[in-house]
Length: 343
Image (tube, rainbow, N blue to C red; front, side):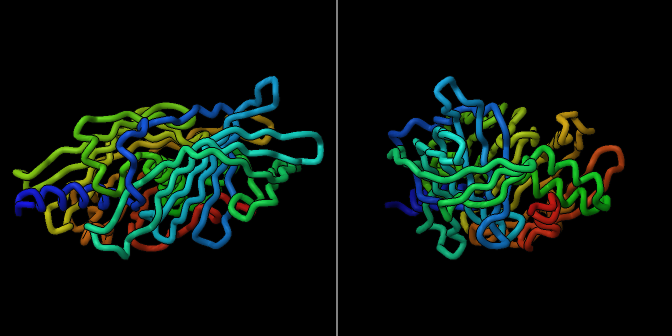
């Protein structure tokens, strides 16, 4: 392999990694997007440890009682996020005892490889080997209690109801929380982009579109090559809703050089749409997330060796609702469970 070819390969690896977390790379023969829309409820719970979130979307059952579902375990030891595992398939509740069968049709893996060198990292993968899980699901007092499987168990609450708690936060905490909650959807999206985080990112030199689980879509593109000093990955969100009640729009961009040093920029707008317990819609919370430090190069999200190491997400809620600078490499503060007062 020539020096130029080695540099091109390194660049492709780098761009995949610096945009977020990492995973095993995809089989190029796979269909890229197999996401089924889930028109129903989004539930959220604490995970097995303080850094894990669990998100469960359950659609409307068909006449046979089967509903589409999407589940993610998201590890957010830092605000940049570390890993995502996602299951997609059908959810069937049988009888009154809470017995529920999950037919898993697709499983995505997007593990944390921040300790690996760039050239040995891989990218997001999906396996389509189908299997079943059995749990008990009990609905009571506005909660969904799932038991019987360590990877899914938890006390879940409706996300749209929990969003109403942001109105009681201080302005700075409300803005920081808005970022953490919007980031749940973007992390889930990155955990479904096949090849994201590894060398297969090069396939997006021809841009590809992925559907949001609830609504909207994203388009991912890659540019740069052997003759370029900088390679670029762009994820452009359009009405993108991957968890119910949380929508993002705009482009998130990463530029990097051959040595693994680069930065992010771009501005996402977000809309958080709370709903009261009686079903009445609350006042939407809207604002922006700036990945480029608001033009201040000392504050943009900085990448070294393929890892986010510094900089802040600058968050502003519209109408003077609060601002915050959220450090990308620090633990979330407040955390999503604290923001939403999860049980």
